[in-house]
Length: 433
Image (cartoon, rainbow, N blue to C red; front, side, top):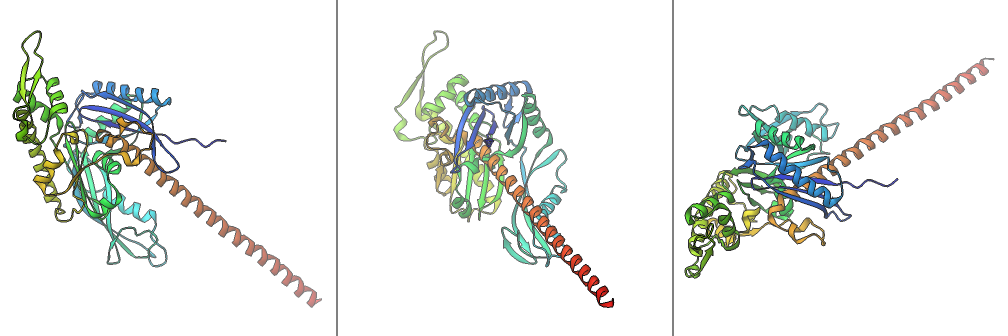
């Protein structure tokens, strides 16, 4: 009987687009993309569902395209969640174990400790999305990353807890289920993007990932290999387009095209004599826009977004510990000269985050774009969960075999004892006779 190949689908419900990508892992752990679907998103505002019907239509269209390309039927998806309602808090938990010196710490102890975090008092109307453990303390021994297998009576841990509005999460789930799909898991989008674009070395050294989407800019800060801070800034690429529309007196569609084709995050002197001709409406005269004026509008808004990012980095307390600097990803990261502007305003080294590292060599060039980092990260998260599930099954099976082996051994000793006892009794009877 052939082993069934696991296929996982990531669904990114964004402000400007809905993307569904189906992929499987090869023997080297790289993603082979089987199908990709994309649809315009008109029912989402700043990462939050504003129109159920329009969002459902976009999801169905994107999923149908992915199904046709991959020649599969999609039943469940890993969904990203973002939006300005997302908040993060730090908390600390503890657990006192009985017989801590006799039995080692296992997964059940960590699960119990994490479960207690879901009982925290949070703002009314919010729910906990992620409970992310950081350093552990075992009997006053600090800085332990993985306590499993150790001995100890008292376990303490710091947790990074991500919360979001219940209604926002339920609306996303309702849209997915209305599209006749199941939600395998709901994952914070900057965590998914980080999975696709950041290396383990960067997370260890300290790095800030800035995901510039259409409606929001998401931030995730890592240090010593662990997530330290998350934030959502309610500005993204769409507000830049709106500024161009108002500043240059053009249609929104034209403003978006100007941003993509001619826009720059830095207004340079060399742009002063460059002009762009835009066709007028219904026979009206062509309109000319200065490239420098266009870039000045973009630079002003991007400076505002970067300043908000820098403020969040300061609030996190890790501004002096980001050796890896800043990585920018998402559709908005493709603005010309944006990494130079980030370096100038923050003083950190900056690079563009591409998801290429996790894709097979034959992947389409279209997929090697920062705008697909979240979708690919969702697939990677799905495979990581699958691996963890398989590891748990292996541990459970091993424990069963171990217990079974112990029972068999005890049974064998019991049989020997019974036979010995019978022989001893028979010998005593014979001796008496």
